[in-house]
Length: 250
Picture 1 (cartoon, rainbow, N blue to C red):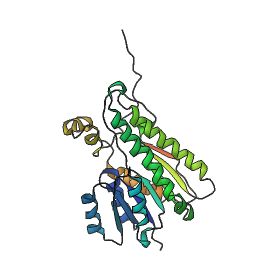
Picture 2: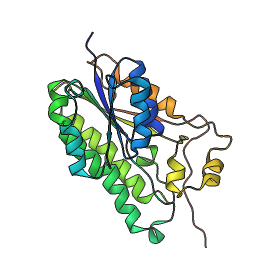
Picture 3: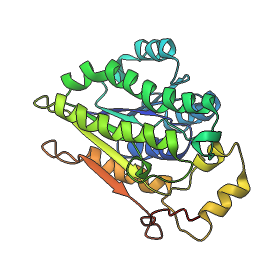
Picture 4: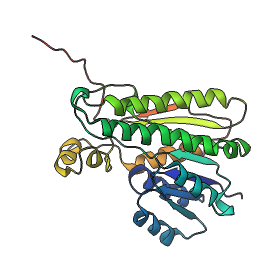
């Protein structure tokens, strides 16, 4: 049986780390990339270098990305699935009080880096009739106070996914946008600069989506028959639904 290869970004924690485990368990090879080398190396120790290849670099560094791609061992060079998972939200302030540097970091990570890696791998994905799964968010559709640029970047991811699907028509490459709602990972810790209490308050009693839930969703998408394409999939915990409109009153 042919062993397929997935490249999963943001693989050091959360959705990415859980997805590495799921795809390796399913018999795939995985390229696990993220900034934190110390979190990636245990993946090789646990699964072996024949199953997991790690690439530690900042996804915003295009030169480092290209170097990591060029350095792929031959067994990992034929990428069948790209999971664009690396991304982040920074800050919860309204736009008029937001930190412009945080806005730019979100755009560089969630948009620029994602399209750069996608473009780099497209020739291989087309050759292998592979698949692309982009991790978007319910924030791409439903705005909320303080979501500003984060929501904007995820709206880009969702629309870019549809555009890719259109452009790749006839190639056999599948493209999916996965749009999770409330999920308990390091997301809120990163967004709040490490405020554990804020993270705990957000998820308390809500039974949010887990990283494992998303990993199983990605596995399902990736292992569907090749004539089926999931265009987009939106997931929320049962405890979360759509917010009402804001009304300001004098």
